[in-house]
Amino acid sequence: MAVIRLTGTLRCAPAEADTVRAALPRHLRLTRDEPGCMAFDVTETAPCVFSVSKCFADRAAFEAHQVRTRASDWWRVTGHMTRDFRLAGE
Image (cartoon, rainbow, N blue to C red; front, side):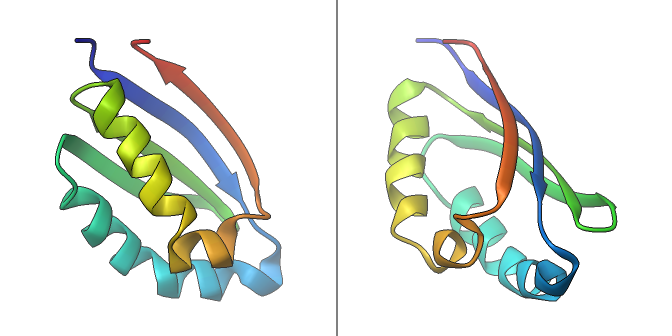
């Protein structure tokens, strides 16, 4: 089993930045509590640019995260935003 790492950025419109900031603590908590989540950080590195880094124990844990996220309030708020992510460990 290979560790799965995702890194990259999420970008939002200036008018949406406060909404992202407000939704982020719950998203961080829920993700960090998922089985197989080894690390998860999101940091606003520039106005409206959020650096994302996550690490999961294996592909199954990462896929379960993807399923949960797509059904979450986080996705409802951010699903349309520009993402530039890279996966490693596949």
